[in-house]
Image 1 (cartoon, rainbow, N blue to C red):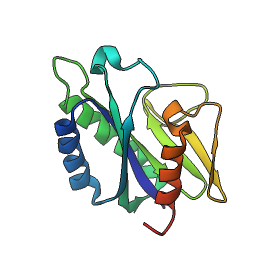
Image 2 (cartoon, one colour):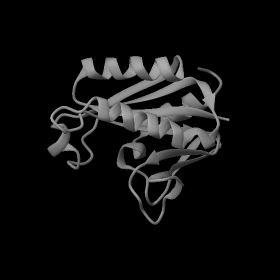
Image 3 (cartoon, rainbow, N blue to C red):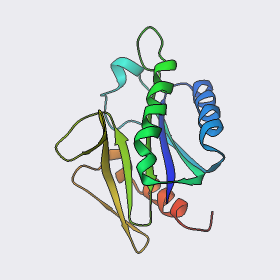
Length: 160
């Protein structure tokens, strides 16, 4: 069993609120949340605009790791439902957190990702040992910052 973590990138707080409500309706109550400016790349700017924010949502209800592909299919549909004039307004990436690792789901194929369903891949993002994070060569920049790693370590503990 693992902790469900979902990252929601957005530029509109009202839209974030709507997306969170849908996610909570589907996956249950939040355990913890962190928000931060997403200024690590301009990759999403053309489609989603500037001044992007990202919120990491940790859910109370645990999931089985094998559910990740099914959850990604749901979040893909939610992204589609939020499109305006063909452009994404949110980017929603689910993952799971265990005592040993953070694995995120992705639609982008890459040699270092493992296909878990048709066009859905798992991406080992962080490793954990003794309440410390270790990045991989392919860790996304926002998961390298101390604030995010500390949040994940706290979320992973029983104290929340």
